[in-house]
Length: 155
Image (cartoon, rainbow, N blue to C red):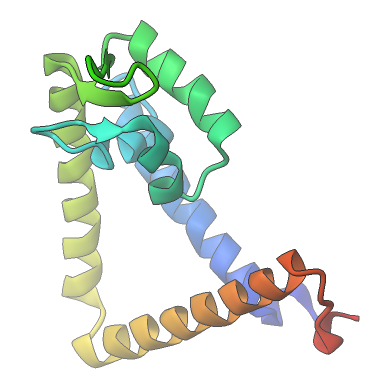
């Protein structure tokens, strides 16, 4: 099977194209797509518990620790330790972080508007149905692999 005919190639190719576009957009504001994505997943009013951010982003906690340190050094976030339980840390956006978050939000809205304007709704409905099914199947396979099972299809 040619790589161009595989489902994973098409998904990865599309994501890399989107990623390059978002990074080009973000570079205009001296940031990156990854930073924007993290900022978009932090509650703008109340902050977000540090332990909740990695699952929201589909990241490994180790990678997130480095990212949060970087965001803190750039003045985009601050950590608030709970007075009741010192183990509980909430990540809060600074004013600069809120500004960068809004720029990221505008970029996402712009991209989605462009896609919705150029691709008919019926095609988008099918796309969302298919990608949801792919995600469900992949998650089921991941659960089997974590449990030590090997899918016959992957052998």
